[in-house]
Image (cartoon, rainbow, N blue to C red; front, side, top):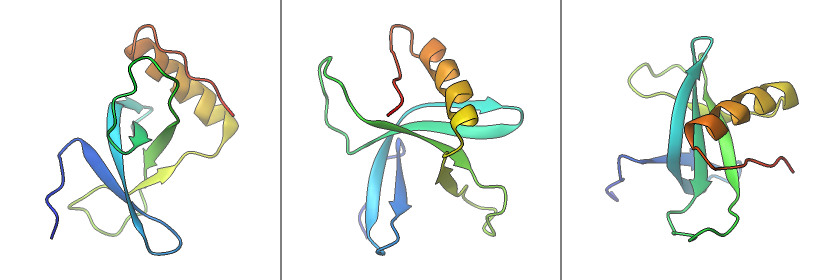
Length: 96
């Protein structure tokens, strides 16, 4: 089994593939845990990068590890992205 860096989170795709995301930042809003992640772990040296916001799934059956899902609600995305921008001073998060 491949050893996983503690600053990464595996994500299981609909095709059954596992994709590793690097955790850039984490926060809690209204009792919900959120992660700002990027795919892979490459350094971008100031280049634009694609990031995703994931939320802990309270319905997950395994209490040992949190299960995270992608945030898809636009209002929730805007709110949480503004918080991550403040946490990562000088970083702009643009929605596509």
